[in-house]
Image (tube, rainbow, N blue to C red; front, side, top):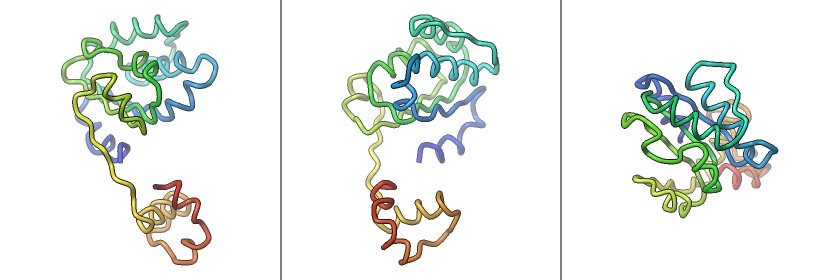
Length: 158
């Protein structure tokens, strides 16, 4: 859903980036620093950006992105530290910047004082199977044989 939203509106912004797997990457050594560096590099189109610490990354994001009209998607956020390092305060960004955060932890959004929260509903088994089939096999129709063969995949797609 977030990727579809991103794809449908990214052309309206001066710069845009979909930062995938924030949870997974931030758990790695220097993960938050790497995420900050990736975000800055992709949004500014500068490949030689070096970030040495989370604090330096925060400072760079504030200085370099505050006049940009940006679309930023932070995918799979699960800790407040991730939000503080990547999208700390509203005054870091132009008022035209839009930040979309995907998470399974609603209280995280509330703690970060996110203005608008959209909760998605779980997919039905059939919708989950269709999503799984499309992503795994590029099939547009789910088949009943697959539904029996991949019950755990259906749960994962939900």
